[in-house]
Image (cartoon, rainbow, N blue to C red; front, side):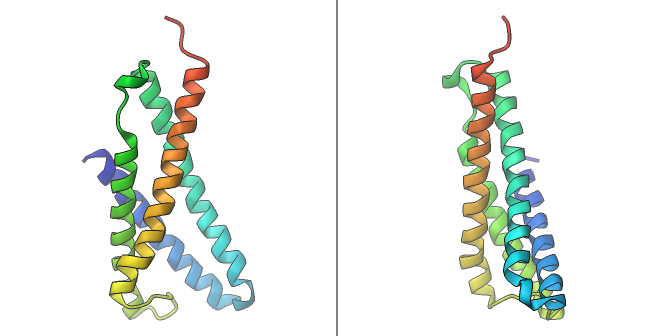
Length: 143
């Protein structure tokens, strides 16, 4: 399984779980919808950021020369696009049967919602990679 596919599948699954939890929590307490949404998306983002840091550290350790490092930006971009489109389509399908899941039309789910998820995964993933590489580069391993 390629790097982007693994990340895409994991984060598509995570986003579907976030949306299911969001729907259940909002139905239980509609007055706290904003807090539930912010909290769940923040937890999702923290997961992406942590994976990105591990990616950056691993890449910097295996390639001490910055010019020889992997193009992790493309990996995270494609993973984000995959996660967004797949999670939107799956959420829409689940929303057909589970009305508590707040979904819109399929086109809206695989474009607008997918763009949000892709941007979130890409920015936080690349940010994590940057931090991970920086952590290794500031304290290089002894030669």
